[in-house]
Length: 286
Image (tube, rainbow, N blue to C red):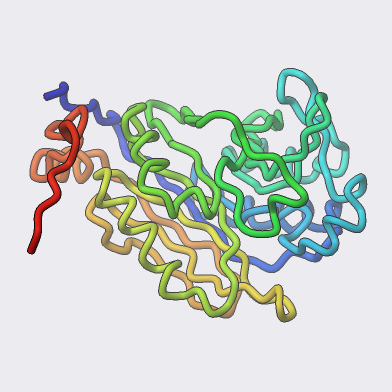
């Protein structure tokens, strides 16, 4: 048995975004992201989550053809000084919103990763997290991230994942065991994947009795057409907000610590979790 995790002292309003970036246009997509962050701030959100690779768009041929133009460069401390992101810096600062925005990141050691940039409320941009679980042809262009990450906003602990990370129960559980109250997942789900999109993220919420904020791209041209469905789930996996499959949206919900505490009291999986599942498994004839 472990001690019950703590919960935050006050609610946190968050936004999840579904939108259509332009492949390869980092500067133009940063302007779009800035407008989306402002819209989130107008609805009192203090955290906004945008889709995976939003700044360059999730379009692997474009990312392969122009790795220099589609990447943002990070310094050894993880800070990003790219002037193309200035509109996004200004929007986060003016709206008082911490934004999580997907980007292709070039690190000083030459690694290229699928990153989640944190644009904080004073406009500083840093690499918050690099995707650990790469999917399919991503492995030809990117290196996997080396560690998990937790974003601290007020007294909320927000575990970070990106798309395919959320398909692995262990990834969300690692965030919860680090004390996460919510799990933020910028994603890029293609049309035809609706069943999996709508299953993984509420499951991660219930597995770990934590809120989940799932963002997704929407629209685009086949075979790079994305299916929206951005959503915010409560700690039992129930939907608090949900976008449709086709149109741009900024969806907002308030994460209530009282709901988090009540859910964790009623469903005590994090406390009751066995440190291991025993020795060698028994096999028997049927």
